[in-house]
Image (tube, rainbow, N blue to C red):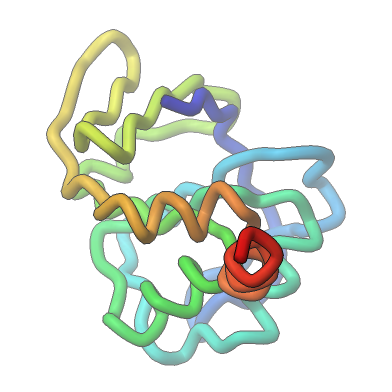
Length: 137
């Protein structure tokens, strides 16, 4: 289980979604309100989010391609329909194994991530995970 502090601000995540990466210090979560994350989000933007310290992105929907780009980059994609209720500075607990998101003392069910995806996230991305697996042999 991970606890995150919600942050937001300015960088083009998609045509209508902007986040200020300069305002982000350390591990945090990005809640994208009232928007779906689709194929307009590319690998460079995901890399910029990771460099800025984002470890989790919450949105109402992700395309499969973006979902995998995020997992492979070490950023947890979390689908949560009620992103409009999330505010800057909120504390959110996410349990990716059990599929549970706690926000403002309310518990919501989210889709749990399979074990192999959680291992990739724990390693910091697919490249780091692959290196660990090769080193373990």
